[in-house]
Image (cartoon, rainbow, N blue to C red):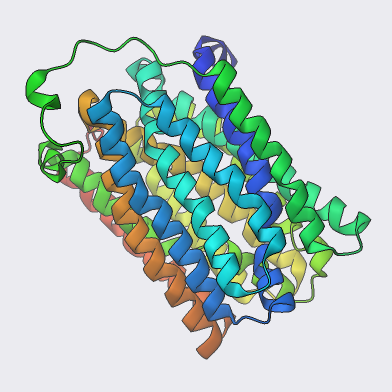
Length: 400
């Protein structure tokens, strides 16, 4: 497993480090934002769900067009750079926000940047590695990204203590690691040589939705399963609200994201490497069961320690499934439509996460916090059933 790390191209490592620095920047804000909205700006949990859902939906819908554009232009790096630059420029707006509307605008700009860079970056990683190393490559990027998600909340926690709970000062500091991410792209990320263009595939308009028709049935099966997974995995903001609800001081709320991200970071590369060896589908059911366990623990929690256990289980679930779906998308789509494949998957997931986050907020406000997590567990079980059905339909063979 360690030897496989050395075999990964330097471009994959560079993109992983870019993700690490940007996630430090984003999670310094994200770890505090739900409590900032509720405790400082006086918004409701439903509005938190709307802001989170709209932001994530915008990011994932944008992936459709940026992915298609990277296929049509046959260039990925400029879009990756533009996306990370937009994300970095959004950070000062959080510090200046005086209303939920301003936070929504800042969050939307941040997620727009994520949407622009997401599909081209993942397609670029696929372009850089051999088929037998896809799981390891996506696992490494997810792992480094998640270590950034560990460091971000820890920095937020330390800065909150140093500034006596000054949310805006922490938001200003989040600008710096974003700049580092942009500089890494400028100096270290390069595109591999690409084969000559096929005129039949490249002529016409930049965005052609009919290109999606060339994606095969195996890909659409992966997409359908991914949508149900997304419905089960609403925004992690509700884990933070659960911790705050059960008595966690605002200074220590980011620790829940630290716990989640640490288990995610430690598990993502081993899970990706394992999927290269035993097949992707065999890790789906364990991922579902861990998510169900996380939701049940969070629903039943009566103190912050139990919320921490739920957050750890949530991170293990992410490690088992997130890089796995990225590799499955590449396994089941043609090379010349990789950007489109990631983009279409993002569009479907964006609509799902918007619905999931709004539903989670409504359940929280109208019935209570446990109902939010129990609904997530129900969708997770549905995803598990769908995964088993897909596996049996393919006769126990690996997708793609």
